[in-house]
Structures are given as structure tokens and as C-alpha cells.
Image (cartoon, rainbow, N blue to C red; front, side, top):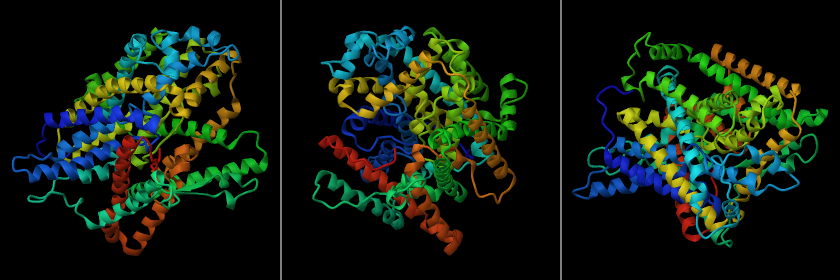
Length: 640
């Protein structure tokens, strides 16, 4: 933390953050699920939150500086607004409400005599977990005159404290790890670079800071501005020519066994080039290299006729890699964690935790209590305590690894699509678990633990890093983030249910309400109908993935010349990397050329150009978000 006196978070910054949070959360379901525009969040550098920050820095503050009686927002106030909108941005979308509402309704709405869900699943679905009134269920998918709030009272009363306990655990884990990652391992937090540059206060007499007046930054900003202006106009006026933004490689690899490479698509995202310039070369290299390795592995499977698909093999390799990666992160932090535990037990002083997000004793106690209470709540609706605890702890593994990927490697779009039960079923099978221990995780995992593109924990950790740039009281910022999450839950419930019942889920995003929502109940019913035994093939693949991950971690830890970062292997076969691999390759090559030609000096000089790519993409996304809300037609162009 910077030396010197910290300043308090002001009430007007909190009010501005609450208003911005409520506004973004209110419009997100309509934009994401009905219009189909670029997601307001969609990744860990959400355009909604960054757009709000740019609005304050480029419009609000210059106006306040021009007005004789105006008092512009300080750097600390801007970052407070930024982190409040950042941590809450995923709540109304993939971070929560995109899935949770559909998942609690779908097992009842799509139940038929053929799938036998009424016999297999419904006895284990408590009225506290899902609505039971047929009119409430039918109106959700087919539309209704108004939201039947009476039918949602019990699920809301159950899910709200459950979600708050999950968020509490995330805050506590981040509070425990912040010092280790910021001060000991010195993670770079690449996704915080552009927001912190925007929030820097200008020199006296200036309306904009040096970054926002930099001509090279605006030159970089013009590149996505020109591209998206032209393509956006094409969306609304088809006669306007369009610039292609994706290039399938199918024509280059049309025949077996090379079709896995033919499935590659080179997609153009200027902001991803900008982010790849901010990360280390080993990280950028590892992302695209391991993804191409995954494709090569799939080619070998096609050529040899191996009885497991390339996707299944990669999935279980990554499951093993997640477990090994979590162990590695904790092992590296073992000294800090030992001291933190000693402080919790009172055997040692907390070693100056006054500047931390919360006292270490509170953080450890909060993590233990929230974990135990969450497992207790799940037992109330039918799960066994051991199964609930196992699911929660494996969810923490996912959270820890995804947060590591975001804050250390700057991977803005992470879509793991992995659930805790996928770690357990290959090893133990489904036979040891009772019906409720199969069905309830199918709902909870899909709702909260499955899609990591908008997990709150990476944003919380980024938010805990923000006070370092402006000497803001860290605990006040944490309290502001917690308030933003509470506001987002309240507004998100209301905005999502209002949209769904007014339009009918059948008329909204097809994948979310018709495909994703039935996948996990289908799997749960399959486990109950025909319980699986231990799948030693998949267990072996998981073990191989874990061993290879440990090898990568050891090589990076022992040898500075080792070129591959283990985080690249964690991401190598998933949906997000199929979107990002080409831009990461381009960004890596451009940075390599810059370093070879001009060294560190040229690297610093052209850095604003690449930051401008991020700013330009965000400005255009925010502009077309507003256009989409007005016209009812969205233009989607960012990853996620």
C-alpha cells in the first residue's frame, strides 16, 4: 500500500457508485437477453463499468472543472465508483441471474412423462429452492401480465442469504491473499492498468490528465472506433460495407485428421491486443501456444482413433490442472498463510494488517463461518452436510484458480464451464450420493459455480488493488463494494423477473433458457436413472493433467529461462481461448517486434497506443449499448 495518509471514501462517491450500479444492473437483462447486444459485463473488464469511469473522466469532471463552483471527483472517488460497478457488473448476467432464475424453473417446466423428471427430480426440489406454483412456472416461460411475487418469496428468502454467504467467502479469501499477491509475488493486475490511468488526477489548470490528452492513446483509440463505426452502421443500414472480424481456417484444413485446426477461427478484438501488450511475453505466448497444442492433440486423437473425443480429454486434463494449480498457488503462499493462521489463533500478531482489506483474524473467521453456514443452508433443503461442504470447497478451488488467471495473467475472458461435481463423479461415480446430493448441486452449480466469465472474486481482488493507486482507505472501498453487491442483488432480482415475465423466457435468449437450463437437470436425471461407477480412464486423464501442470509450475518456479507459463495450460481447450487465441498471438508478436526493434524505450513510448485500443473498444461498446437500448437492435463485438 502506498505510504502516507489514506483518505476516506466520500459519501458522494458511494452515492454515484450506487446509482451507476443500479442503472447498469437494471438495463443489463434487457440488453443481454432480449436485444442481444454486446454484454454489459461479459468479461472481467466489463464495458459497463469502464464506460461509467470514462464518462466521469471525460465528461463529468471536465464540466465540474469548467463550472466555477464545481468540485470534480478525485482519483480516489473515481476508483471507488469504478470498483463498485466492477464487482456488481456480473450479478444481472452470467455471474448470477442469467442462470439462477432459469435453473430453478426449468426442471419443473420441462418435466415430461418421457424424461421422468417429476419422479426423479421433483421430490428433491424444496419449495425454498424453486417456485412450485404451476402458474408461476408457466408464466416464467410463456409470459404474464405481472411478476407473481408471492410465488417467489420463499426462493428469494433462501437464495439471497445463500448468495451473500458466497460473496462473504470471496471477500475473505481475497483479504487473506491480497498481501501475498500484491506485495510478495507482485502480480501485475493487467486489467487494472487502463482504469487506473484514466482515474489519475490532471495537473492544476488541466481538465484532462496526461493519459487522456496523449495523442498516441487517441491514435490507438481511433482504430476500433473506425472499425466499429463502419460495422455498427452496417448492422442498422445493410447497404453500408462491413469489415470482416472473423476468419475461419476451415479452407486451409478441410480433411481428416486436420479438421481440429479447421475449426479454428481467427477473431479480431482490438482490446485483446491491448491487454496482451500489458501482460508478460511468457503469459501471452503460453495462451496461444497451449491452445494450438490442444488442437494438435485433437488431431492425434482423430488420426489414431482414440476412443475419447478431444474435448473430453482436454476437459479432464484441465480438471486435473485446476487441482494442481490450486495446490501450487497455496504452496507458494504457504509462509504468508502460516502467519495469517497464527494471527487467527492469536499465537502471533497480525504483522501490521491495519492497512489490509480486513483484519486477518476477521478474514479467516469469516471464511470459516460463511463456509459452514452455506453448507448448513444447503442441508436445510435436503443435501447432506458432507456433500455440501465438498461442493463448496471445490468451488473455492475454481474461484482461486480463475482469480489467479485474471489478476496475474490478465485473461479478461475466462469461461471455464466446469462445475465442482465434475471433479468428483469420475473418481467416485454417482452411486455413493443420494438423490438430493445429485439434484441440488445440479441447480446450485449451474446457477452460481459454472460460468466463470463474470465470477465476482477476480473483480473483488482487482477492487482491493485499486486503493493503492489513490491512497484511499482500503476497508472503506471494500465496504463500498459490498454495498454495491447488495444493491445489485436487489435490483437484479427485480429487473430480471420483470423482463422475463413481461416477454416470456421462450422469447428471450434461446441458449440460456432452452439449452443451458436443461443440461444439468438432464445430467442429474441420468445419474439417478443409471448411476455411474468410477471412470478410471477419465481419472487417469485428470491425473495426467495434474502431473503436467505440476511440471509446468516447477519449471517456471526453478528456471527463469522457461518460456511457458502454467496458466496457459489451464485455459488451453476452453471456449474463451477459441475466441482469443489469434489476438493474443498478434499482440505477442507486436510486442516482440517492439522489444527487438526499440527495446524498453520504444515499449514505453508505444504503450499508450495499445491502451488506446482498450479505451476505443470500450467507448464504442458503450455507445452502441445506448444505441441498442434506443433502437431495440444490438450490435455485439466484444468477447464474452
